[in-house]
Image (cartoon, rainbow, N blue to C red; front, side):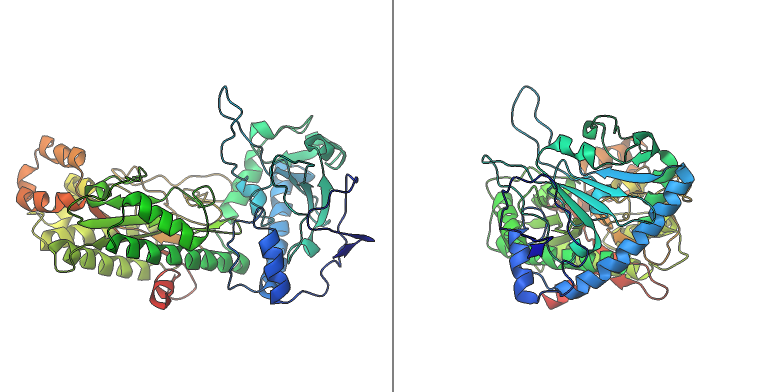
Length: 494
């Protein structure tokens, strides 16, 4: 690929410090074979396995529209904050205390909103209204580590790209007056006078708007679903084969093509009673005997966008626990269908409590009505977390409590401290729907201490406790009409 009279090698090591990529670099988009080569070379920078169903032309077109949306949002945010430039560092590598070992690098989500780069520390995104976005891409001379290839592919024609060899070389490219910059990043990204200031009016506006996904973002969220479902199918097979939690985790990672650091969050691989630990990440090395149940909460990353999927399985398809799974699964599907524009997510959460308590009453676990269980707090012992959250660049995406784009907040309902989304749903939002039923000793003890012993059939509780719990989670798009479940069709086709 020729760029300003110079040809990129696979890993260029020429003695030049800055390279601006011309606007017409990819005026003729390469075909699928070329895209496969690009994807293979850039896997270190992109959180995407080599095999992808997305074609380069489709992503290129969607990205162009996405960028127009981002620049319009940035124009408004900068005007509100009184700034001339938006400057977003990608973030730096952090080292463990008293050691030279680094922590896994995590890119600034404000950075990957603009460009699909997730493993490029010491890089920068600069946007000035009326100009093309500029990417300052850090590509050091380094024989200790693999160096990312120069940017190429379907997105680079939309940005001006400069390559630097040392982090401090960015100073010559950043806007001249640091005080006129809205710099969004962590304090450790400070470079000279460019200190992240994270102005609240700018963040409030940008984060609020992130709830409304562009077609480009929806495409990548769908791709992340495909990758994760591939892993879920492999994990279920490993469970059926009697593998340990660790073995199931490894089967999942192999199927997705991502290691633990590339996944959007730590896999929850819980066998038997471990399913009662909401965020169980211990990965036992030996399979339990007898093997009763399996709860998996695991996602995947696609160009910086996350998926978040949960399923629960019983070893014995004829067990009461399998019947309970089936009931929760059917209820979860109905909850997802209620994701509609104008619906208050808080009400969906309350309705989920009533539905789940109705199931427990049907299965003989509760002796009181769902309404009584909710009013007395008993329901929170069996369903202690929120129904779900926004998802996108981050698993728990930002602005779940935002009342407006100016920083106002919608509080959680009293008695529901772990709900992560309190907004009224609007078209373009993508949410998770993840009801659960668990048998957690410390929470059940609270039911007894609070004088509600007679409200629970403890014999039925003891029968279900060895299975841990149940959680079913899909991702659902709020549209102008019926909800779009991103997860179920992929499982059906897998």
